[in-house]
Image (cartoon, rainbow, N blue to C red):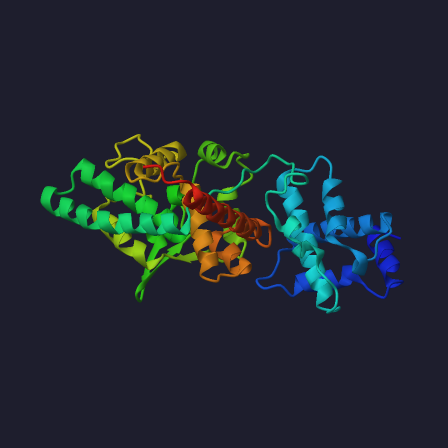
Length: 367
């Protein structure tokens, strides 16, 4: 008898079949979960159920301290995998809850929801996500709006000088990173045809990418040339490209950039004029310098494209976006812990930011 059937037989004595219930839950998910993801989730769920048998626990009696003990006992597993366990077990209990309404979900515990609970999240594979606060986001958008008028005037007065071209390009890069949540790789590799103007909206086709040679792909992806992260997420939603809606306030910058950019294969080339033999693709380090310099110039220290992308996700959550919608919008691997982790990080960031504001208010005003 295989492990799955052994677990089924064990829990059948308790009048419950958590394996079958979870399988049905995954198959009913929309958009559909890929077969490889289902197999991965089933494996993690079975391991957890097997652990319950080992420690003589029934599902109705599982409490947050038991989940904590399971997480703490995971050895040689990095932080990302631990968070995937957390997501799978949470969804497993949600699936069982749909059949047993009185069952509590121990993953709702505040301590287990804390993305910074380092006693069991000891893996070092990921740093905590960074965000702009709501106030900082509003200030950044206001700065972009104010700079737009200046850029228009400069382009009309001086023409398309190298400085004006760079000014418009750099501002548009910042606007798109915050206004669409594009990945760094997408900002570097989108073709101009990716921009689609609809009635009063702009859509960005995140599958409209240039082709990278193997060395560049390896450098950008930090992986082997045969494992293309560039294309991996494109087929994540039933083979359909992600079409991201650009936030309205960023449209003016994009339209201005499209009106002044030269005819190149990429939306944001590395330089104004591409000479024979020069690469048009911007280096990730160049993008990092552009965003950081823009931030320092306008009072946003430590600004990065990834921080802007994270903040886009946070703003969508504040607007009421669901985790599934955010997974699809931001191109996270389908049903992985991407949006779930971002949401937990955002809640922690907001709480910390609010506490810092209170502490600042309590400080004595020494004139």
